[in-house]
Length: 161
Image (cartoon, rainbow, N blue to C red; front, side, top):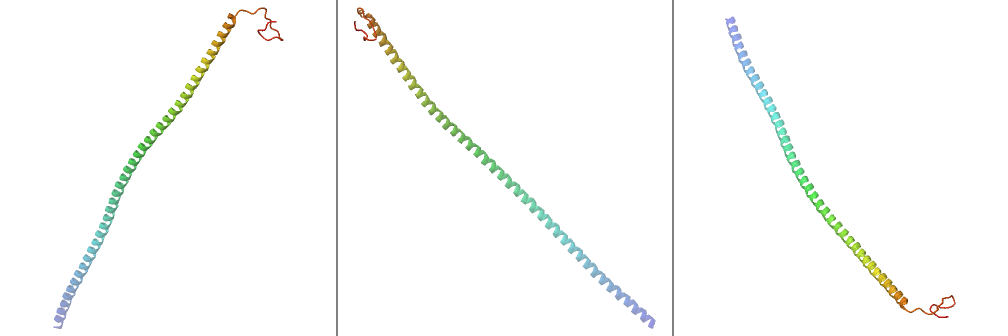
């Protein structure tokens, strides 16, 4: 009987060992499963974090792109306004320059007109003086000649000697 008891005890021990091994195996598998699940969760969290970072970066790039577009449009509007303002100032400068040229031309024309009138007046005076000289000369010629009038250096003109 001792052999049967021993066999029964060994069988019981084997069964207990199997049960313990099964429990340990199940615990190991459960731990391994939990570890793998934790790794998957960590990997999923990392992937989610990378995706969120990528989304945030993409969103920021889009915001920056829109901001740059707005700044470019504002700058283009500023340049258009500046060009229009410069054109307006250029037209005003041309108008003022033309007005100054017109004033200078008017002054020059007035000086030329005064000079022309002065020349005409002078020519008229010269013509009148010449006309007076011719009348006086014709009057002198129309007088009867003086008798034997002689001009010398000792006598004055028109005195008879």
